[in-house]
Image (tube, rainbow over all chains, first blue to last red; front, side):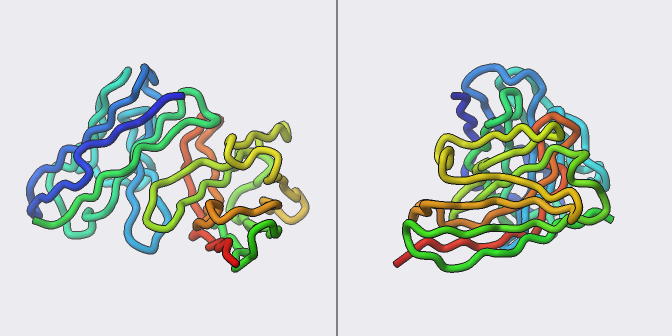
Length: 108
Length: 118
């Protein structure tokens, strides 16, 4: 079983600043990693797949990097609409794959 | 425009059954891998089940033997039959379209809440 660990659990950042979210896999998942954004009361939205490919319609301020066991989601200049919970998901062994527990990005 | 609309959630007693539906538009369900993902209140995301274009089906260990995923090509719809429900099955259930055949989820429905309680 591959376990995904996200850090930090909560990240406080001011609008306009950069946010860096981390995701670590307990074993290599190659580049088979996706990132999702979820706002309260809404469904998750795909941001990134293949560790670094932005999904359709996702702004360029969102970028993903990493491979193997260490991954990063960077939001270059936070907008008010970016404050949400972010999940990583490995799909290297999907199904079942595995989600991280989430990072809550809050306004500082 | 791709749309996924779930229905069928509600309150059910432990041991009971429920059938969730997901109506799709903007694409053909049978030509895509489809999945159900759930989220317990205040918790993270958990993959539940998937159906491939071939008709092959897959389940999380937590629901294997109790849940059945299926589709109706004529209605362009996805279903999840849930039997022997337990309180720990309480969650919002999302229908999702899988990206290519990879395992990431490109499109999501709005979700339907299932509450298992006496």
